[in-house]
Image 1 (cartoon, helix red, strand yellow):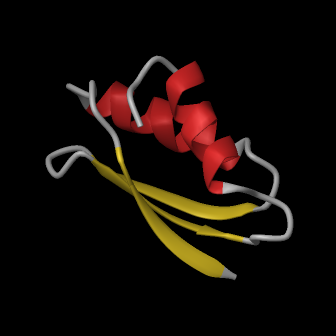
Image 2: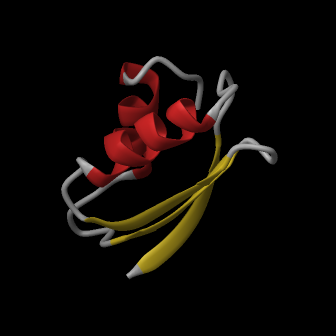
Length: 67
């Protein structure tokens, strides 16, 4: 397992935080995703053989935010 931090822009409330976490957790290979609304970042633990950084960024963008 590896850990990565992705900057996330466009979040303004608790719903945004939950939406980003849900989108990241839907990516195959993501074990955990913790979003910090105030710092505008997501800390992710994932299996690099199953999930790529690009797939995680795409999930954030598809949820309506900037990664």
